[in-house]
Length: 201
Image (tube, rainbow, N blue to C red; front, side, top):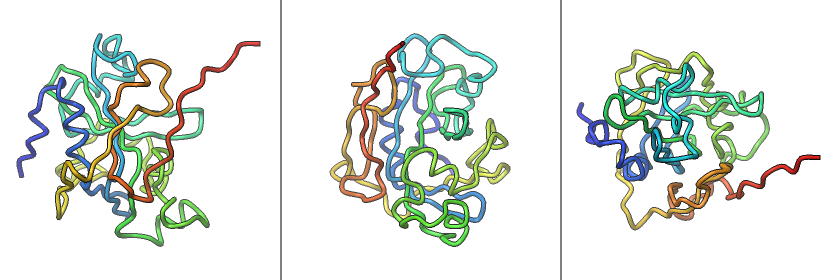
């Protein structure tokens, strides 16, 4: 199957992010419908992006090919998951911020504990826990079933009228860029928290 966003240039990463809403991601016996995503561009274009200063051993997967997973560890305790997009050699990725569990509720609950269903994958760290995603997913293809993750088109595409946009969450640079997209009114969307720099003592 051909996915148009796979061939979109990195400069169109915000539009790619928006179109990924409603897509479904399966891993570890759980399937999630994406309700919130966040776009990040590449070298010299987006100071909030891990790829802003060029490729490193950690970020080289962001430079393609598209359709692969980019995972990274934050705060010494959480994994976050991105889908690489854009042309090969052009860094761009979409952070998967939230979703609703549409299949595999028992497995998601076993990983996440006694929380409300809407909170099972509400936030990027919770989403990866619900799916059982770890570093092993990094660099694997999410489209052909060869890796632990499988991304599938939505049964019903999300229209532009159903989508809201706003500033990104938890980034110190370019935090006001409105590249976070979510399905308006969906209860699984994570709350917005603007980044507050820590004061040095």
